[in-house]
Structures are given as structure tokens and as C-alpha cells.
Length: 148
Image (cartoon, rainbow, N blue to C red; front, side, top):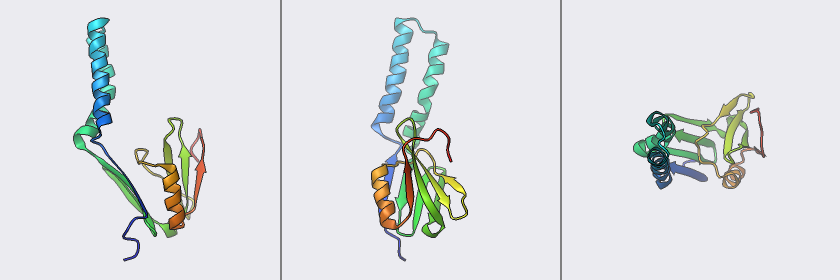
């Protein structure tokens, strides 16, 4: 069947050293604050909750992927996945966010917006090259305060 080999494939695993280092740094800093400045354990526990998503990613090792095929785009992010045929795509919007990451939105032929999950790995230059190869129209927007 045509389109079985992706033009480009972007993957990221949840079990990355940066996730574990982030959790260790946050919890280590909080332990130091409890010891050095007598930070209340309640506050340390509340601040420590912010590290739980990174720890959960490390434990579950959730795989995140975005594949561009000649005839479709496919994505998977743990519980959310999807496929859209190239014939159904009017354009792909690549919007830069204020955290310097990118957010992908697929506009279908009826004008409906399909926002791809924000955790998808999206190196914009390589993605644009893959979309050009697949013949899928795309727009890149530097910053947008309100999604369109």
C-alpha cells in the first residue's frame, strides 16, 4: 500500500534523563529549603506537586510520536491518537508559543480546526520540509496570543 513509509517521523519517550533530573532538582531544592530556611513542610509538599507530571512521564514511559506520510499525518500521545488523510487537510498551521515551542493545528477542508496535542515533538523546520515533500499546505506563524 502506498504511504507505508513515513517521510518524517518525530518521536520522544517519557523516560528521559531530563525528567528525572528535573524531579531530583525540585525535590532536592525543597529539601534544602526545609533544612536551611525552615520552609514549612506543607509548602514544600505543595511546591513538590509541580514535579509529579515529570515523574509520571518517567514511570509510565509514555511514547509520543508524529509521523508525516505521503498520504496522511498520524500522531499518538499515550491516550490520544489520530490520523488525518492528506485529502482532508486544507492546511497545517504551525504556531509558535511564548514558551518557544510549537503548536500544530490541522485545518480540514470544511474549515474545522483539529488541534494536535501540545506535547507532540515538533521541530518546525524539519516538519515544514516533510509537509512540503508530502504536498500538504502549511503556514507558519511567529506568535499568536489567541488561537485561530
